[in-house]
Length: 372
Image 1 (cartoon, rainbow, N blue to C red):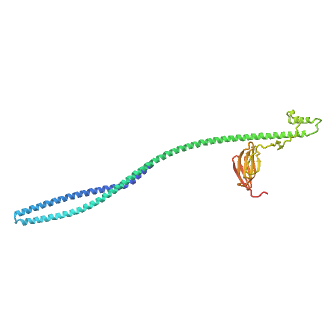
Image 2: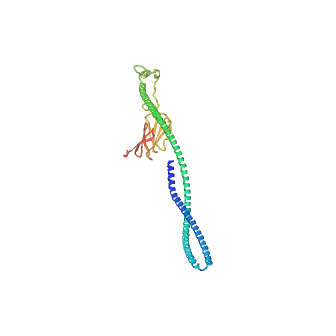
Image 3: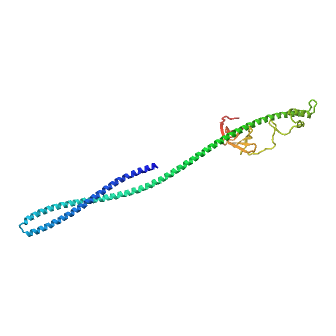
């Protein structure tokens, strides 16, 4: 606000300077006009006085002539000479006064001309002053408008500052909430890792138990195939005794003969291959080139196809978990998955590696030699 007031003061100072000279010149012109008018009035009074004096002299001359006629011719010549001298003197004074009056009339005409010029200048100056007053009024309106806009800008600035403070508080609260969420996420991640490690230990224990049971099963099968008795005992007794010795459990369940299973066996643990698929999934638009099962017990299957994509599926529900694209229009020829790392090779002689948890590509390696 102080800056606006200073600007107004500077503008008024700049606009007042022309008016000072105008007012001074106007006052000088008014003084000159007053002096010229006073002079004209004094000249007119002098002219009237001269006219009155001439008329008085004429009356004196007439009276003297009458006296001369009455007095006679003796003193006529003497009085006539005096009168002639007096008349000549009066004529000379009259001519001098006439010249002065002509001169004064010329000066009065010149003064009137100057007065008219001064009046014209005064009118032009007054018109200029009126124009400048209008301009000053317009500038005052502009200053008022600018002052109002300045006040509005200040109010908007205060509102923006309040909003900015609110945003800072909101950002601070969001940051605190994000830190809490990050801590919670880290804690959940640590718990998940601990549970996975626990499950891995349990799985290893189960694998050891399965291997142990597989060995016992193989031993029982080999004993069941024996046709002769052992130390004079029948076949059933041999199997029951072997089952009791190996298993150390319920001998009644071991006494029945184990017949050789006709079902299909798969893997070292003797898992039974299902007779029908659990899920039928249309994995790709083109033919599938490679399928790989995740060996880290995450129940994931990765497939590669000629449509330049690699897709990851959940074996528990048959749903698509992730899709990766590589090689442009070149088909993907092979795929491998282990935990959160997926690797795929394509016909464009590249090998691409992705992270399953972030769904981002880690690296691309190009192979320049041809494999036969």
